Length: 249
Length: 314
Ligand SMILES: Cc1cc2nc3c(=O)[nH]c(=O)nc-3n(C[C@H](O)[C@H](O)[C@H](O)COP(=O)(O)OP(=O)(O)OC[C@H]3O[C@@H](n4cnc5c(N)ncnc54)[C@H](O)[C@@H]3O)c2cc1C
Ligand SMILES: Nc1ncnc2c1ncn2[C@@H]1O[C@H](COP(=O)(O)O)[C@@H](O)[C@H]1O
Image (cartoon, rainbow over all chains, first blue to last red; front, side, top):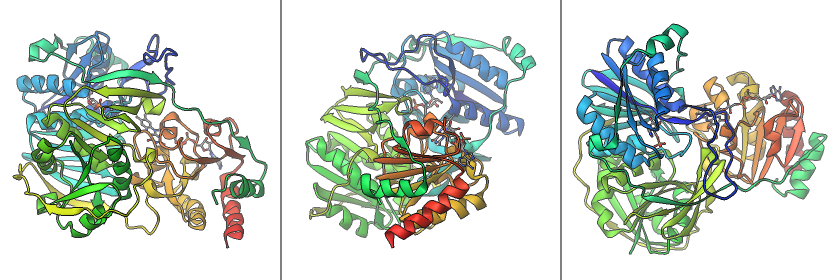
């Protein structure tokens, strides 16, 4: 079985982004970029399934600019077998990403596709579910445990009330939550080896997709700032303020 | 035309999230119908019919809907979608699971986590963990929205909508329910609580979390939250996580105990009305959003605070 792992190049999670004052977007010049953290978890899970003998090959896919090659090299250095870059200049919406991924899946026929639950730039939390819909496959989102059993997979999901386990017919879509695993670091020798692993270059047109924005961005603004607060000297003062100034207790 | 709101419910009770999402649905300007799909939906449908602003309640019953499985639920919603201009759900784990599937089946883009409705097709939503807010206009013929419940007040009661059953859709047979682990608790739910007491990595163990945070929460009738670090370390269950990738809350009072204030945590609580931070590091970023900060050791401050609050509230 092959496992396909879509990985997105995003602003590193430690970076505090800056909104452009003219409202046209977020300033991405000279900002550190990394693999979306949930996608690292997805790569790790796929590698563990390969190491357990459940999967034979792990393929990383990214849809993005030329520099997304670096993100794919990271996946290869972690241990993915090969990679595919579908090159686009602008950031696509999840529906177009899902359509392109459907095209990739048509060629690769994986048994499992593991995505992140959410990209930390657009915070959409949509692509995996959309891809499952387009393929007519089952979906196990927000996974904290994945257990493949023959031609089905049990996915334990982090839900509002606790945990839910569902059984999915394979091929299936899984999206990762934070506690699924702890991703490995790539070792230096593996980073060197990754440079020689195959990385295919494609375009959306290769999959018959013509990306088209559906959500027109009118402005991008800074969130409202909170008024600076005060430090209080004692618990008694805090309780007094909560009661008499803020009126919340 | 009309808006369809998908009800979120568990154990025969309509979640508060639906009443909040209803406020956003009503703001679209069209009549709102509520879909209640489940195993046994009578009580939930009645509760939905009483909400102010609901024009009709549709019920779909069947075992396949009992656990909110995305595949049959999405097919059901799509089978009804022809009559609606907008399909709306709260950004709960159920809403987040099913609505993008619906959107893709309808070939439209979903607008995730709507925090303000500016018009029938224009919405504000957070990106980059809420460090930027986008205003977007959907150019799709149908709108599919999930609603950030912390941004909307709950609709009140006073309605008496008609309840009518609709046909179940065919079972796609792709998935099945295996089991669940749901912690029963008498505490208010995080999304609905007026007060939240949250603990971070500083608590050091599940025992300490329980010993230190719970009595303060009890004294305040509060829900309990946690940082991801506390959840990862096993001090608190996953469904208590507040943040960019956990729950987004906006209570009247949020008390952060031993939480540093990483942007991913702030994303989940910085819209709270009043924020209190207790942290021994006076440079901790949490103090930048706190209305009241107390620098010191939480293991002495939190019990003292609990005692002082008891004095004031009894
Ligand atoms: C993709 C991604 C998503 C994430 N999503 C979330 C999310 O949804 N929610 C979330 O919370 N985090 C999230 N995180 C993690 C986040 O980046 C931080 O690591 C996390 O919030 C830190 O938790 P903490 O504040 O409890 O721990 P720390 O940062 O370790 O802070 C502990 C604090 O306790 C203080 N302290 C220690 N001892 C005491 C004492 N005795 N008394 C008083 N104060 C004390 C310290 O001064 C420190 O400020 C995410 C990270 C990633 C990469
Ligand atoms: N451009 C992209 N390239 C590859 N994978 C992507 C891309 N966009 C989204 N994904 C995948 O879809 C997941 C969810 O993204 P989103 O729906 O944008 O929050 C991510 O964690 C990735 O696994």
